Length: 68
Image: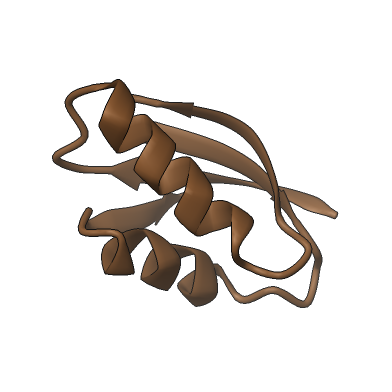
C-alpha cells in the first residue's frame, strides 16, 4: 500500500466530503484515510494507477490532481 494525497477543488461542505469519500471507496482496494474540504488522503495498492483515483473524484463532480 502507498499513501496518495489528492488536491480536490470545489468541495465546500460535509455533503461534498461524503460524496468524494464514497467515490474513492468504490476504487478497488483503496482505504480512505482522510477527506476534508480541498483534499483527500488515501491508502491505495501499488498497482492502482493515480489516474483511477483522480477519475473517481472527477466522476463525482470535483476536479482533482495528485499532490507530489
